[in-house]
Amino acid sequence: EVQLAESGGGLVQPGGSLRLSCAASGFTFSDYDMNWLRQAPGKGLEWISHIGSSGATTYYADSVKGRFTISRDDAKNSLFLQMNSLRAEDTAVYYCARRGGSYLPFQHWGQGTLVSVSS
Amino acid sequence: EIVMTQSPATLSVSPGERATLSCRASQSISSALAWYQQKPGQAPRLLIYAASTRVTGIPVRFSGSGSGTEFTLTINSLQSEDFAVYYCLQYNKWPPSEFSFGQGTKLEIK
Image 1 (cartoon, chains in turn green, brown):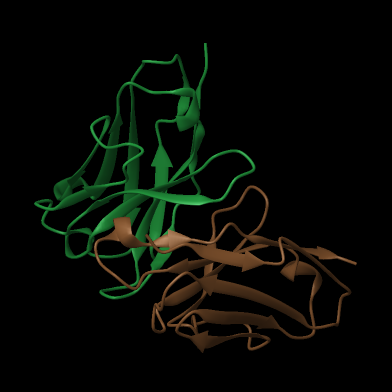
Image 2 (cartoon, rainbow over the protein chains, first blue to last red; image 1 turned 135 degrees about the horizontal axis):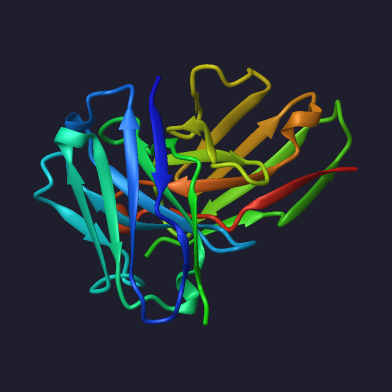
């Protein structure tokens, strides 16, 4: 069974930094690309970052480009999101997600971790 | 950028009845359309992909249809556990920055 578990969320001041982690199990982590998505309180879903299976390719939403960095450690079956220069509008539940395969949508999601940016 | 528009924003239906949710794309996305269900405090759950393919384990009362720009999620014989928010996602073009979600339809008990 595919399992994804995020951690690292919390309260941070505007301009601060936070590093999120996602522990994966139940599949060969190195075979799959991975993604981060988020959901602001009471709002819809937003994709924010992708990393390819080799780690060589990354993509970011314009809303986080230049401030967030996605990375992975296949030896530890882990996905990361380094978030810098945080803003109030980054307040959201952050999910890691895996697609079902090539040409498929996000199928497996973690339970999410809440990031609150406030002074 | 492809804009996904879901309607209605809120749908009130009685248990046992049928619910019909719509999702419209601003340009053709072929059949690259997925439907998710989200309950309060939970992660989204994938129900349907490729517009009409049900994920393993999803009850047969959930069905998807459409192609191009118009898509429908139909839920027959609504059960209490079906009342939730539903999102559509288009994933027609790569990279994922080209994907886009609808704003959601809240299905509530009438």
